[in-house]
Image (cartoon, rainbow, N blue to C red):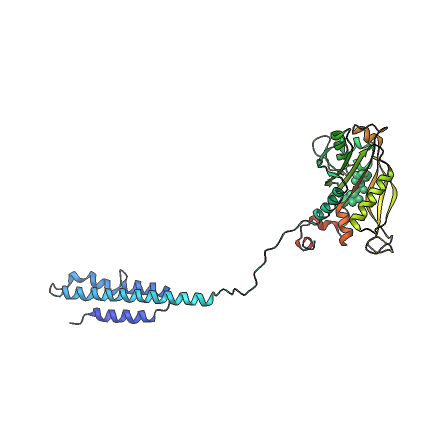
Length: 341
Ligand code: FA5
């Protein structure tokens, strides 16, 4: 006897043939084996059939159910393989493609120049001495022989804090007195690198924060000749063995006499170019013999001891070396600038 069950099974198997994806397979399962599918409804209604028909109808429906479940798992496996093959083909890994190299970090150009400068002074027997960035007015100015009316103490130049007498150092020179007070009466050969702060109009040449490297030598019998020879030696190590230097008289309250050192322009070789403003010379640092008042503030008797000091700006030196025209690039954090060093 033919039951509608045969037609249901045939219809379900035909529909299964048409299934091409796992999503439509889920829909097929709901439609043909789900709780409200014709087959399940048929099984649910068995009780309402005449008793004599029930065994045959029940067994036909169960066979149909098993046949559909078996067909479903065959289809499932076929689809799984098919989708895997598709994924393997379309997501194929091309091992011959060049990799993406990781971006390597590097030292900031200021740090590079700073390290070069410190390495040279280390070769020449100078130790690095770290001094504080937040200073007192006393160390930054008074002990360095700045008279009370000196314009560098003006609000234009100094960052004051809300604590009376506490400022951000405007130069590394206050470290001179700190190291002298710590080492007295030993001889001193130190360089003091670090950040300085000035309440400046920020321009292409002047920043509100910048590095300085200070140098200090104190001992018995140190003369201006030692200062000149040592700084000239530094210039040769830094800028090349043939570089010429010159000293010009200058004024700093904490050195006497005071000078500025220029090197012959390494861009034009001294003939004059835009970098050296046609002068043939580039200003590199300020220097001088430590003022007797500063020596005694540091604990050294100026009748017995003498010394020389100098201060240079690594950013300005980096600008000269690399032809950088705007000092603001150093702290703008633009990778296009930083990557070049
Ligand atoms: C001084 O600060 C002295 N303390 C240097 C010194 C030390 C002289 C020891 C004698 C003995 P000056 O103000 O010229 O001097 O600054 C020294 C260097 O710091 C400058 O040549 C420059 O390279 C750098 N510098 C100063 N102001 C700025 C600024 N606003 N931006 C960038 N660099 C600066």
